[in-house]
Length: 450
Image (cartoon, rainbow, N blue to C red):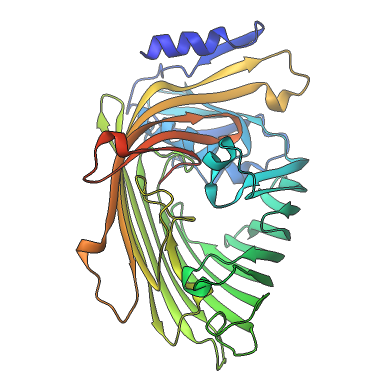
């Protein structure tokens, strides 16, 4: 099957394209230690941006697993179209590690086109009601320090304008990062409780946030941020905001901890991810005054024969005062249960889990398109995976008990496509648990599910 799919994909490629399989390593495993590291191809990117993602440091034992892990970690920066690592022995004990990268295009205008709430199947059915469109401009690697600056706007469903700035190394020595964002949007209400048999309405939101954090090690970061939100509803009715006037205006404080050993963040095959956050919504406020606690745990385990097992468990819990309807948590928008992909569940609290098994039909490789005029687009990395999955989850209110009988669950299978510039697309078939195969649904989605 792998050879058939690879042959088909290659045959439809341009005649001047060159397919390059990622080579096997030729050096002996667990023989050498790192003497020095040389970086080639990073014409703009500072070497320490790459260095901070590598597990191979001075005197580290060089293994095939460590080299492949670092290749994925560097590619996961989303700064390069291609990454390779060579090991050149210097003596019986030490070797030079040569990191070769091809840089992406960093500064460009781009079109904004998408479908809100991931309703891609509706577009195929001729329903364009949730389409949004616009334009933006971005710099992904300002001054070669992985600093991101962007601005964009969109019309159509949920129109918005947004600007942002992220500097992952504002203080190189202490590994301090800083972020800023400001936005304005007219977002369609998503709360079924607020709807209550009335015509739907817009939440007119404006606000922003500033954040600061520290990267303590290769895998560990902590952060804090201050956020401001001004939210006004276009049709004021009781319960749509906590203040009776139809406008909630408040600050929130957020603190977070992340432990992340994943090799390739866009589609991991090894490692762990743990994220814990605490948020105080409403600082010195009378109307808005509640807390939220978020936990997200993910694990990726190579199981042999190229199979990767992946699992995720997450929850978001609330405490304190009343949670506004726009502060509820949902399945059916950002979080989904495949098999119940379009089913909306709403509550003050949420819990969910996902397990997947991935098998490569085509392992990651490159196609070299020499005929393209820009070097930044000539190396195209791609892969195709077969995946099986199972999802389950539930939402509930604090006044109610969490009931296992109210959980929704589903399972299924699909094909996951990996494209250049870290893009992932999925075509899946989800089946509600307890239903026949014919009761399933076709799912079109972007990005990895976990």
